[in-house]
Image (cartoon, rainbow, N blue to C red):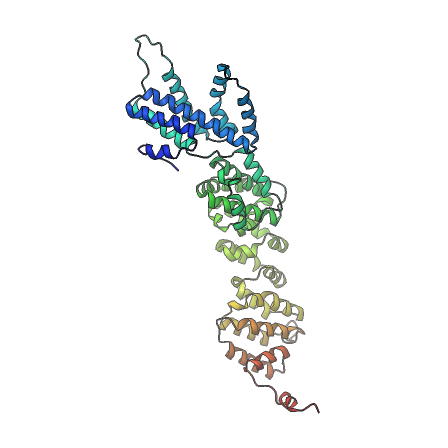
Length: 466
């Protein structure tokens, strides 16, 4: 919440601590009567009281830095004004550096308040006897700054909570689900009370672990880190956008090839960040794809990314089209997709062995069969009928387990947007004409009344057992 200059009545209602509220109320009352020196002094006291009260609150929640300063505060005796003044002089440093209650810029603004308060609270001993009189605008600005920077906010957590959360994300118990990660991190004990600077630091730690750390990263850990970034994006969208816009490109430009390859599984989880990748790094990424072998293509989940990223898909197609049919089939089998449909059908039709026909049918075609249209199914049927293998023998129709594939394809395509009945009847007639008949497929087509049972089978059904 940011309150504007004119909303002083609303502002005072939003101050959390009752003691700080009393002093700020005095400051506003003095401002309204024109006692601007008194207003500055009361505003500074409200800042000091607020920091001290938040320090005590954080110490109760076991914040180590807060506990250290709370112990020192408790040692100050009521008759020791020097110790009190020394502690007061250090309050802004404590709030900024140790507790991260305020940012460096906010601290610099409040330092000016402290300096002007000192001038207002002591005689200047000028030659003409004149004293410093702050303008009304300055007194008002300090009231609003103090409230917006400190008084209306709960005690936020800083360095300690960021490190704890980072360590938590690295634990196997941290959820890989984005929704569960959000639920966990959104709580008041975690990111719910962390200042923007702390959130920024946590997001940076996560990105550094992915793209700067020489240690390898498991898929499970990458999932947890992506889920954490998703939670940060939902909780603090402006901070998230700032970090990924300003830092991701630099990290990628500094990464060696091994670390840069992590962009592929990372984008599978956060493809929206592709827009943050600068052109020079896109050129490097294209080069990485061209240099990958089949094992690396599978390891870095390139086929999966090609499904959701059009630019990567273009490079992926160019790469796999240069592979042998065996390697191409193995790569697509790792992640069959409707985007690879035409290539998968061609690979099936060009099978040179019984094993390759069975493998390509079950691993490339069946998983995407619900996306087939009439032409796709016709191409599969024609490819199966016309296949000649390596030595003029049909390697698809003669494959031992191909009947199971056709039976599965029949079932899967019943829900596809195609003319199922006519296409399968035409294919069955071609099979029969060539002397092929697959029992499991035949049974399904008879059950659906696509074809009639054989007369011999019908006669057998009419025979009585006794």
